[in-house]
Length: 117
Image 1: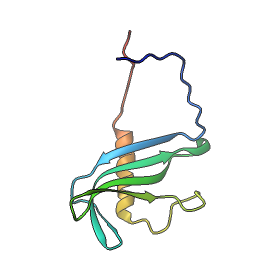
Image 2: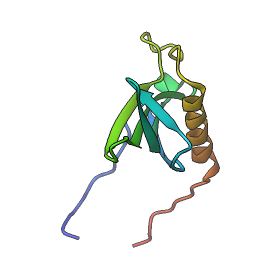
Image 3: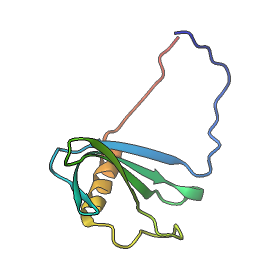
């Protein structure tokens, strides 16, 4: 490895954010935009805990396949325009994706210890 590093990193964010990616089984979620269907195969859900508030889902970025076989990215903003609650009109299926991401993040039970020198 041709890299060196020094210092003692400290997080400075007052607004911690976590992005959870989940793979979706092909054909289980279809997103429709302007009359065109897209088969979602991956979702990246962004969560934040502003000013030590409870975690809130902010957005979902989908990777999907269009009818021509090409890949597209689709983003759904989950918060309303004043950022104080959920946006109206979000389909239940998208909230299920958010729930899957939140559950997988909590259920994975990641434990980590850096390697000893």
